Length: 206
Image (cartoon, rainbow, N blue to C red; front, side):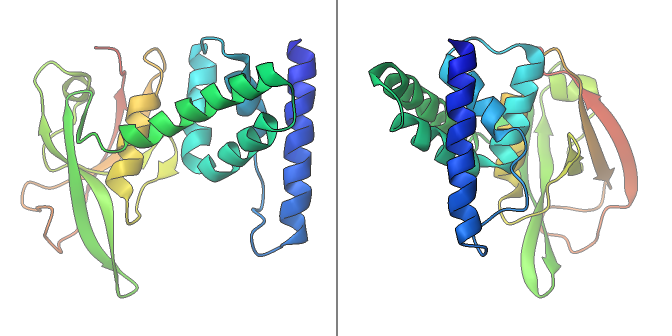
């Protein structure tokens, strides 16, 4: 059954890829792991730590493609697959709701604002850290700016939301590497870039 399910998802993604190639402007350079994550979601089983990590990264970097693959699966199978795809889409939708959380694993997150090519951009900034929390144990401090999380550069207009989503979805048993810059003098509205660079490792387990 799992083999048939995987085959159907791969077929769906191939159809999606063909449609995207027909319109080069909308076609992504590559869609790694989307078919695998879609298959895992449709199977409806509890994720292992490595699968949860893959899901966290794929849903952040390729959310649109993942949703499209699930929508194709929803209307290309029987009633059971329709129901499975519907549940999978609801799970993906819940990820967006995790973006609205301002505090994750004991860290209250805000924005560090700066200008980039005459446009305002941002990087996640730690506002407060709860004592004894995963964030505290990792060594995060108020004022830390998080440049990179799990190898993903976070600078963007919605950087805080992306960081909150990745923290919320990351498996407890796998270490999460953060690259931060810190300065006691810089604030979220400051134009002074933070210079001291640190690499921290966080375990999400409470």
